[in-house]
Picture (cartoon, rainbow, N blue to C red):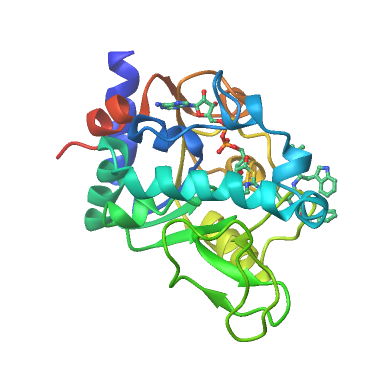
Length: 240
Ligand code: BV8
């Protein structure tokens, strides 16, 4: 394993432009639940009910209870050593994080180039006039309504079956094409199109480094796959 860490450090030190894909695993050591680990969000919530537009149309109060609880948890959470290591790395070379997370912890750690593929838990969108706002209390009312058109507000996140924003897709594609190293941290790599980015990078001949608690489909194509906790491994391969 030591030799793998040294190889990863060398890759990271010599890279001129780094693309990073992060998932819920990078925020686990900040105390936030992941989706698919035991005790994860999908253990006691049905995706269909709380992470699809159909579920929201059927029972918006249930969806808001799910997102209000996550807003509260994310507000109390602090970036961990993994978030901080990526913010540090951004000081040394061109680096953009493509995050599937909506918790805002990369930005809280000081990362500036962050593409939120699936939106942000800190933004709400009016289902009527489409107004997007981030000026809301930590916990919204059980059924929040738009102050200007009175329609129901929804979390400004991408649910299953919804298209990602086309500008976000274009930005992400640009990062994968421009980078000379692709780092993947804390994702089960099952949700598309985010999960495709490490494979596209690899197909284009870029070295892929994975840091994850368990093996994933990315492990098969990674140049280096480091198994363990992101909060322990990232500070090892991205020295202060
Ligand atoms: C789309 C919302 C085009 C925000 C999320 C039918 C109709 C339409 C589309 C589909 C369909 N069937 C399939 C699809 C495609 C679908 C998809 O990919 N489904 C999968 C399940 C097969 N994708 C979509 O729908 C996307 N849109 O395709 O549009 C379209 C549109 C219409 C019609 C056709 C096509 C939209 C996907 C976005 C869904 N929204 N989140 C929120 O509430 O958070 S997904 C959610 O799960 C996350 O955002 C994330 O992206 C995803 C995966 O989660 P991870 O982040 O990877 O977390 P997970 O728990 O799974 O894994 C954590 C990992 O970390 C584990 O490996 C664990 O071991 C590791 N770990 C844990 N602790 C640590 C650690 N590692 C290191 N250190 C630790 N300490």
